[in-house]
Image 1 (tube, one colour):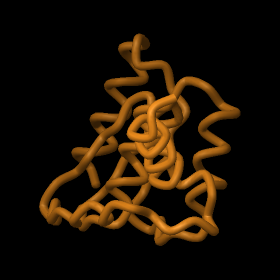
Image 2: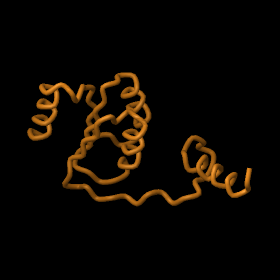
Image 3: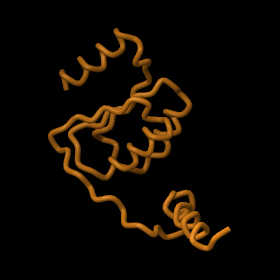
Image 4: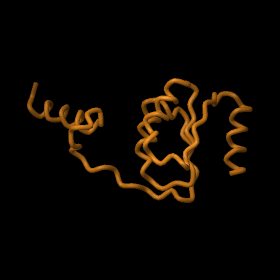
Amino acid sequence: MKPSTVKTIDDLLKDSGLFSFVKRTTKPHECFDFSNEIILITGAAGTIGSELTKQLISSKYQKLILIDFAESPLYSLIKDLEFENTTNIVFKLLDITDKAALESIFSFIVVR
């Protein structure tokens, strides 16, 4: 394997966050200001959704609503975030193909 490939793989592993004892090689993403925004993430417990959630957790937002259909992965996400400030985070287990469930979540957003 070429040394440049090995370095790239090493950098990816360091930046993955899998090894808490290893320092990141890149700077953390800057925090964005979504203070006036309600952010809704579907598939929040999936690969992309959970990473997006972890990136947004340090930003400012009015409310972060995390939706997933899979109970165990959603529970894992809740446990992953238990030491973060979750006062403005809502976790919802629901099927986005269910029209009534979607209407309930959107009415929940409007009421709050």
